Length: 318
Ligand code: PMV
Image (cartoon, rainbow, N blue to C red; front, side, top):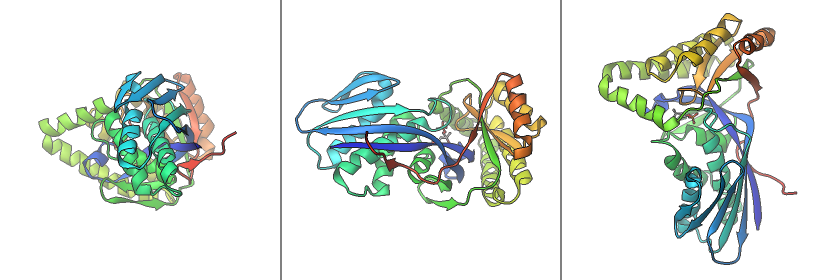
């Protein structure tokens, strides 16, 4: 049996970091994808993982031999093997158009595509809760204490208001244009999440006020995104300032935010864990090219994002 799946990337419009502590996050699935092909082979032996980016690994008796970047995938394969009634060998091929370490949820997208493909071996229609649970096994290896926001976006698609351990609501997309600007700086989600956790220890009052404010902003943006771009943009910029207070911005990200706003964007903020990665910019048709030009002048590449309504799905094999 051969199964091919693809799952989308995501951008967080508001609520990164605070979502880890039980506050809401607003996230959109976007039109960049990871792909996983799973082949079942009717014999015993190590499972094989072949990743376009990281190379080849073998999973033998629960342990991975190969590049450590493949550990999250090995974990998913092991948990699947132990919990479902599959006996045999798996060959897994992984490729992704999502830049790694950019804040677009590349690891979650791969984990979701793999979890879905594996569960498809034993279920005609893999239950979403099972896909979520299995993909989170990989995410827990990749990051410290993941909220699940990236995973839910890759599974469901569309625009989602998500609260960890509680659930999510699907919302209608707005009419504004989202531009994604790449700082060119790789970052590490685990490091950033731990940095925020240490602020919680050292300065609990500042931490709590900031978290509550980000939460209010997230809910407010989810209500105005469809109707009031000016307000949504200002709230995004305010969110960026609060993320800076948490210590996850830097001068490169700040300069992308201010360049965008001064050239006509409604608002802008870092997206994802911060410390590098991307800036999400809200613009309209009129100011789009001006903002793109201004970003080029500071050597920043940007691309217009398209929200996609469908999450993980099967793909035809050639
Ligand atoms: O690093 P990213 O883009 O996958 O975003 C992580 C979002 C955080 O809120 C920082 C962590 C999480 O698990 O929600």
